[in-house]
Image 1 (cartoon, one colour):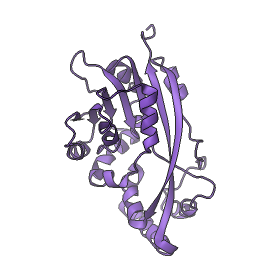
Image 2 (tube, helix red, strand yellow):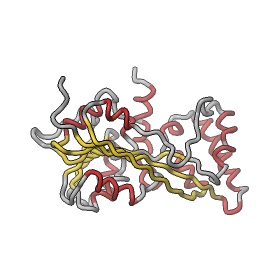
Image 3 (cartoon, one colour):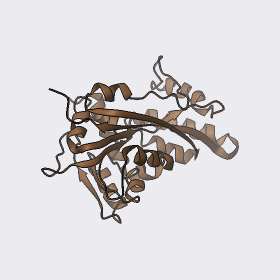
Image 4 (spheres, helix red, strand yellow):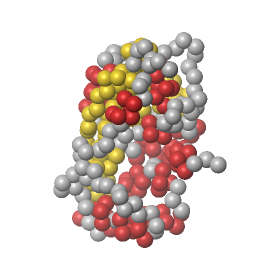
Length: 271
């Protein structure tokens, strides 16, 4: 039987029609830092792991990179092809990253993942990335995560009583990370023995949402997609009710991302 992780990994395909509009854009500075740290030039060849609908693909493709996108969800892959149709130097392949193989002898300047790396089999992901990269190529990944600055919107703390009521509350050891304090994967990258010169950079930004926009965002999160219908209906009704009582009817969500960039170690470690 598939694990909970494997089941949640496949839920995103059902949100293909909402993902592109609902998910946040990443800061332009993040892309600039990635390009600088990886030493990329226009025309370089990139592999994207889990492109979804092309949220991170578009900004990089518009900078002149050739991108091969690997997406496990067939509906997400179809949406990405539609969104990226005007960019002939982008190819979308419907496949699992763990089992996909490029044409023999083909190697890439960068393997990257935006909010997808943690879904890849941890026993294979670094090895697969290393195999795809040319000598001196780079791996990069980041995620968009909720962070809680001083003076941030209290809505998210206050709504936890509803999550508790429906049995979807946070675990007792859950944390409320502040901007710049999200954990990073530097140790994991270095322990793989396959990458060196690890660079970590933090980015944060804020987005204001109406009730409808926020519920559309929740509909792209695996935990909310997999929620029983009655739980989701109760939660969404309460979110809408509480936001209607606010002046302006909006909430502010603060996002954080931790960018990791690492150079392929050459030659490979012994063994």
